[in-house]
Image (cartoon, rainbow, N blue to C red; front, side, top):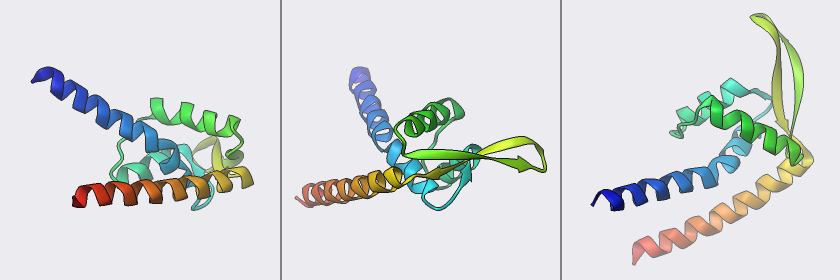
Length: 113
Protein backbone atom coordinates (compact mmCIF):
# COMPACT_ATOMS: atom_id res chain seq x y z
CA UNK A 1 0.00 0.00 0.00
CA UNK A 2 2.80 2.43 0.85
CA UNK A 3 4.61 1.76 -2.44
CA UNK A 4 1.39 2.36 -4.36
CA UNK A 5 0.96 5.70 -2.60
CA UNK A 6 4.56 6.68 -3.40
CA UNK A 7 4.05 5.77 -7.07
CA UNK A 8 0.83 7.80 -7.23
CA UNK A 9 2.52 10.80 -5.62
CA UNK A 10 5.35 10.49 -8.15
CA UNK A 11 2.84 10.37 -11.01
CA UNK A 12 1.12 13.50 -9.71
CA UNK A 13 4.47 15.28 -9.37
CA UNK A 14 5.42 14.31 -12.93
CA UNK A 15 2.09 15.62 -14.27
CA UNK A 16 2.68 18.93 -12.47
CA UNK A 17 6.24 19.14 -13.77
CA UNK A 18 5.00 18.43 -17.29
CA UNK A 19 2.66 21.42 -17.35
CA UNK A 20 4.80 23.91 -15.43
CA UNK A 21 6.51 25.40 -18.52
CA UNK A 22 3.10 25.81 -20.14
CA UNK A 23 1.64 27.44 -17.01
CA UNK A 24 4.53 29.91 -16.74
CA UNK A 25 4.24 30.86 -20.41
CA UNK A 26 0.51 31.43 -19.91
CA UNK A 27 1.15 33.74 -16.97
CA UNK A 28 3.89 35.67 -18.76
CA UNK A 29 1.68 36.01 -21.85
CA UNK A 30 -0.48 38.46 -19.87
CA UNK A 31 2.36 41.02 -19.97
CA UNK A 32 5.76 41.80 -18.50
CA UNK A 33 5.96 40.34 -15.01
CA UNK A 34 8.36 40.09 -12.06
CA UNK A 35 9.32 36.51 -11.09
CA UNK A 36 7.81 36.58 -7.58
CA UNK A 37 4.55 37.75 -9.15
CA UNK A 38 4.63 34.71 -11.45
CA UNK A 39 4.76 32.51 -8.34
CA UNK A 40 1.81 34.40 -6.83
CA UNK A 41 -0.28 34.01 -9.99
CA UNK A 42 0.50 30.29 -10.21
CA UNK A 43 -0.47 29.84 -6.55
CA UNK A 44 -3.69 31.79 -7.09
CA UNK A 45 -4.51 29.38 -9.90
CA UNK A 46 -3.89 26.42 -7.57
CA UNK A 47 -0.42 25.41 -8.75
CA UNK A 48 2.06 25.39 -5.86
CA UNK A 49 5.61 26.30 -6.84
CA UNK A 50 8.63 27.60 -4.97
CA UNK A 51 11.45 29.95 -5.94
CA UNK A 52 13.86 27.01 -6.22
CA UNK A 53 11.70 25.66 -9.03
CA UNK A 54 10.73 28.84 -10.84
CA UNK A 55 14.12 30.50 -11.32
CA UNK A 56 15.81 27.58 -13.10
CA UNK A 57 12.69 27.20 -15.24
CA UNK A 58 12.76 30.91 -16.18
CA UNK A 59 16.44 30.60 -17.09
CA UNK A 60 15.72 27.55 -19.24
CA UNK A 61 12.86 29.33 -21.02
CA UNK A 62 15.12 32.32 -21.61
CA UNK A 63 17.90 30.10 -23.00
CA UNK A 64 15.31 28.56 -25.33
CA UNK A 65 14.48 32.11 -26.44
CA UNK A 66 10.87 31.80 -25.29
CA UNK A 67 11.33 34.58 -22.73
CA UNK A 68 13.34 37.73 -22.47
CA UNK A 69 13.67 40.13 -19.60
CA UNK A 70 14.10 43.81 -19.01
CA UNK A 71 15.52 45.48 -15.93
CA UNK A 72 13.17 48.05 -14.42
CA UNK A 73 13.77 50.43 -11.56
CA UNK A 74 11.91 49.69 -8.34
CA UNK A 75 10.64 51.98 -5.59
CA UNK A 76 11.40 49.20 -3.11
CA UNK A 77 15.07 48.49 -3.76
CA UNK A 78 17.35 47.47 -6.60
CA UNK A 79 16.15 47.14 -10.21
CA UNK A 80 14.01 44.08 -10.98
CA UNK A 81 13.88 41.69 -13.92
CA UNK A 82 10.56 41.68 -15.71
CA UNK A 83 9.96 38.71 -18.01
CA UNK A 84 8.00 38.80 -21.25
CA UNK A 85 7.33 36.44 -24.12
CA UNK A 86 9.37 36.59 -27.30
CA UNK A 87 7.86 35.85 -30.69
CA UNK A 88 9.33 32.35 -30.35
CA UNK A 89 7.67 32.08 -26.93
CA UNK A 90 4.30 33.09 -28.38
CA UNK A 91 4.67 30.40 -31.06
CA UNK A 92 5.61 27.83 -28.41
CA UNK A 93 2.60 28.87 -26.33
CA UNK A 94 0.28 28.35 -29.32
CA UNK A 95 1.73 24.87 -29.86
CA UNK A 96 1.46 23.99 -26.17
CA UNK A 97 -2.12 25.25 -26.10
CA UNK A 98 -3.02 23.05 -29.07
CA UNK A 99 -1.33 20.08 -27.42
CA UNK A 100 -3.08 20.74 -24.12
CA UNK A 101 -6.48 21.01 -25.81
CA UNK A 102 -5.92 17.73 -27.63
CA UNK A 103 -4.74 15.95 -24.48
CA UNK A 104 -7.60 17.40 -22.47
CA UNK A 105 -10.15 16.13 -25.02
CA UNK A 106 -8.53 12.69 -24.99
CA UNK A 107 -8.55 12.41 -21.20
CA UNK A 108 -12.13 13.74 -21.03
CA UNK A 109 -13.20 11.07 -23.52
CA UNK A 110 -11.49 8.39 -21.46
CA UNK A 111 -13.09 9.63 -18.23
CA UNK A 112 -16.54 9.41 -19.81
CA UNK A 113 -16.12 5.69 -20.52
